[in-house]
Length: 223
Image 1: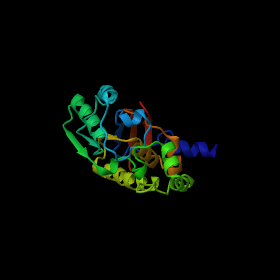
Image 2 (image 1 turned 90 degrees about the horizontal axis):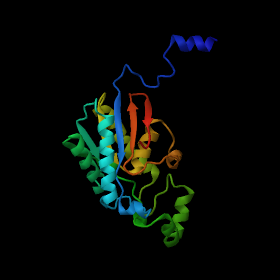
Image 3 (image 1 turned 30 degrees about the vertical axis):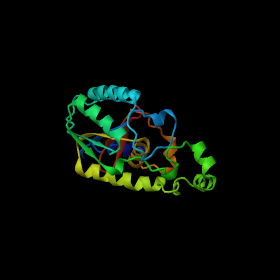
Image 4 (image 1 turned 180 degrees about the horizontal axis):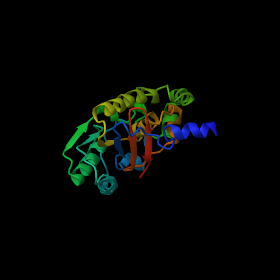
């Protein structure tokens, strides 16, 4: 009973966000399909553009975003500099009449180093020593000439903090890749990087986050 009294006198526990603070809404969009997605390749920093299906997916996502954001004033799209993300951004920008598209290197996909262009099975076969070393601790060990998940976390966290500082109370669209999108969700919800593979961001999907300075709420995943 004492606990119930304390809760009713204080803040409603159902309200995770602090609505006295400005709420920043982020619509995270993964780029549309590429040939590498079709073949399940590790392609990290390889700069492949959208295929026909990917362009169609991006157009459908643009229509969804138009409905989701119709009451909001979105002034810019922030995108990874890789072509698959930039092409997705342009399709969205055209549909929503958003002219300002900003590139940010912190949104680039995690580098898979010398394994890029392979799938995991090929990497294991062609580079067994490094693969076995990596698989023992993939969160802190890099693929050869690539990035660890912890290194991805560091740069995505930098982007996250900058967004809260630069766009308080605003709504923005962020176009990126599977790795950075999953990491942004983990950072916002204060989850450990070991949960990285518990999440999935489909091609051209929308993930919606609402943020205040101290709290975050996941409003939708893979919309």
